[in-house]
Length: 269
Image 1 (cartoon, rainbow, N blue to C red):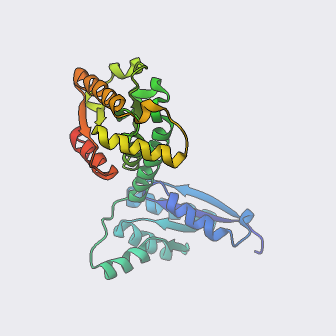
Image 2 (tube, helix red, strand yellow; image 1 turned 45 degrees about the horizontal axis):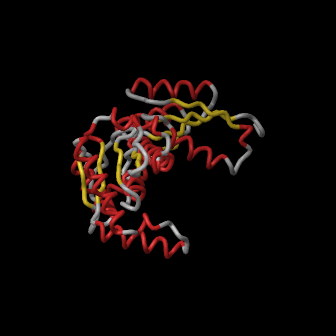
Image 3 (cartoon, rainbow, N blue to C red; image 1 turned 60 degrees about the vertical axis):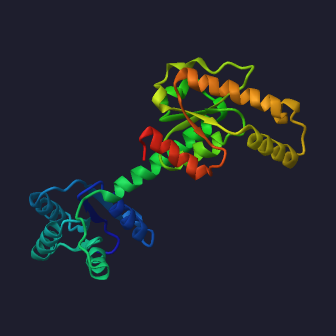
């Protein structure tokens, strides 16, 4: 009957998110007001497969499914043919074709894409954390960090934090300033997740001078004076030693090398 509502059963052995996205993408080409979606998640046995077909019979529905188990897909096809219920297999043809092309068998584990999706959002959350806890911001949240980097200005605290956040770690960084006390919260942390960053004085002077020149501003004598820089580094190293924090020298290391060393030191590789 023209214009009648059609029932579409979205069936999956995981969340059904992938199947639902495909169905909704296809439905954009039609009058979706005439489609009623029924979502059946976490199918774990043949009985559930048969029950879906029975439900579809009652409303003359269509079954669209993403089942990674070959046995479940076979039962769905068979029951659909036997009961005259249209079935559309989203994953089966792709898995079969990839099996031929890659010459390996699929894992047949439900929900793997969802786990990849969760990893992606965890990385986004970690990046957001690094950005919002840069340069000593929100010290009250330091206990939420996986790692805390500490060092004087221009020891690559921020870029290393961002790099590590791309690996999924929540990283905060705190500057060491001679006339400013470190936040009290840092002394309450497990010292195994704190990394002190140090650098050779002449290298730090060159980095700071280049930055001042690039910005074309006067950042003050203390910022680039070699004697003042030596004092800063000595002061920060004394803090690191006194607190028993792990230390890495970033003098001749790239951001990636420094981040890798931090992961190795903290057992996060």
